[in-house]
Image (cartoon, rainbow, N blue to C red):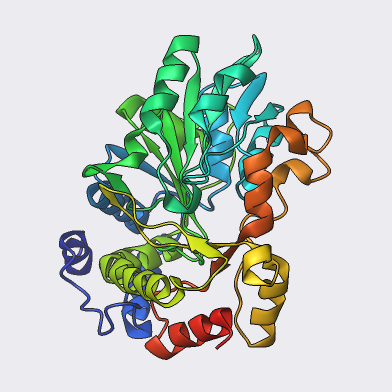
Length: 378
């Protein structure tokens, strides 16, 4: 390992001038090293460095990198031999449910908890049938699911638990990573996330044997040069994105701190606005402030969520209607019994009321104040 890589492991090498964004010069230095090595993918040096650095940062036993955030979900279901039916949430990005579809698994939708947007544990057992083999909850907006209650249900019924933690990078409860919950957790490192490799993702697992099996599955099932042990897929992360991730990891704490300031400014600026509500930080939780959702009560606010959404766009402000429409309303899933709106009243209301305001660690005070002024219509 050369001097640059040794320093990367100790996080001392590249002193990022801005505390929030890697410099082009820093990335160029790593690209030059990759080019000289002539190894640009297939479990290269930077890939291995990033896996270890992430395991250290997230305080989890094992990390396996993927080329995006959807493939680890698909692969987790394969690795655990999940079949039949899986209980999941309709209030998420559609990749959550698509991962089930690609494995020939029937999604069973259960309503969410209004306190956090996550799968409501009190609704899970009523949805369990003899065909149920797993639960796939989502840490919505990085709000932690009630992992203890979900695990107790899973243990009673002999079910696996796979967490879609795409939003939950760095989130802890009582100092413990929520990525340790369940049988596996998956992450997204898409460009919109708090921690990004441009495109990318990861799976968190608890033991070395599982890590080895996942690494085989994401590389066509190869266990060596000439032996294939399972029908795997090609979903490895390349060296360029791993290098970008190593740089981003150096500034992620500063980015989260900056995002927290944005969230606090939104809360202070919007607290007196009638018809708008939002969640406050949860006690004992280290949030990552990846999103700032607000709820629009049209009768009190004088404008529907959609009207506010388009009003913001007219002012050059791009909020997001996460998650609208509900997954359960899309054509591949709407005919399922569990997809009926009357079965999902809380999720349906959230889909109609929530808009996520712009959230990024490089938003200026002026940017944030503009959003507040437009939302408050001052």
